[in-house]
Length: 113
Image (spheres, rainbow, N blue to C red):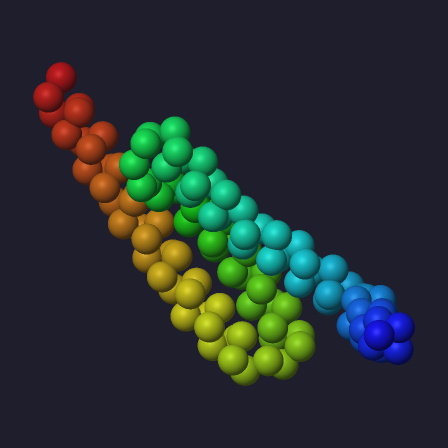
C-alpha cells in the first residue's frame, strides 16, 4: 500500500509540478474562467427560482473558451482545438442574438414613448 501511495505521489509530482510552465498556468486560469460560467448561471437561476442563462454566462464562455483554445493550440491538441473552436462560434452567436434582442427591445421602448 505504501508503494502504491509513493507511486501516486510521484505521478502527481510529474503531472502537476514538473510540467508547470506558463501554458499550464494559462490552462488553469482558462479552465477556472470557463467554470465560472456555471457558477454564474447557477446563482442567477437560484435568484430567479427558475433556470436562466445570464449574459455573463456567455461572456465567461467566450473568455474561457478563447483562452482554452489558445492553450490547446500551444499544446497541439486537435480534439481540444476542434471542441473549443466550435464552441466559440456558439458563444459569439448567442451574444449576437442577445444584442439583437436588446436593440429590438430598446427600439420598441423608444417608439412606445
